[in-house]
Length: 137
Image 1 (cartoon, rainbow, N blue to C red):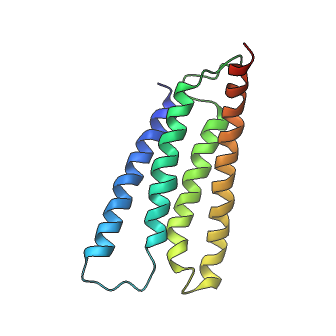
Image 2: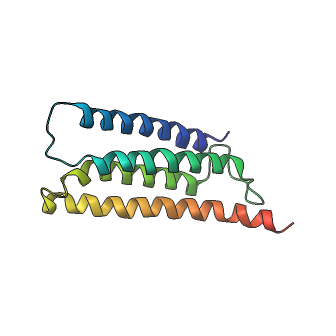
Image 3: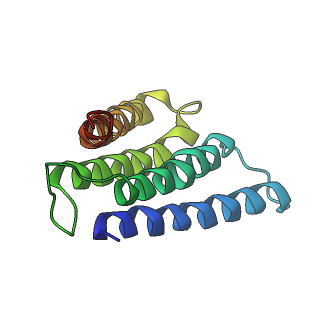
């Protein structure tokens, strides 16, 4: 298994655990939260866990075709990993406050959207040639 796949899968598992803990803490604690945490744990579960597990497994399972990438993973795959996770980081720490103080949290929120899009775009650019090589038998 390539190193990049292990990173995606392990990070996805950390997001799963974190999202469930944040959900349980926010739902079952006696503290009344003034911030909205629901979008946080949904992003942690959807993009952090499910998407990263899918990306990690697909980078591992789809053959590389003519473009042999190193065992650690290609530069494009690593860019996808760091962009997606940095975007999630900005999203997790800006989105709960977007409803309270829009002026302060709007820029990190917009940066998170851009980084998440860049990460997904890098993944698509990485995996697309692998899919083409399968159809040209």
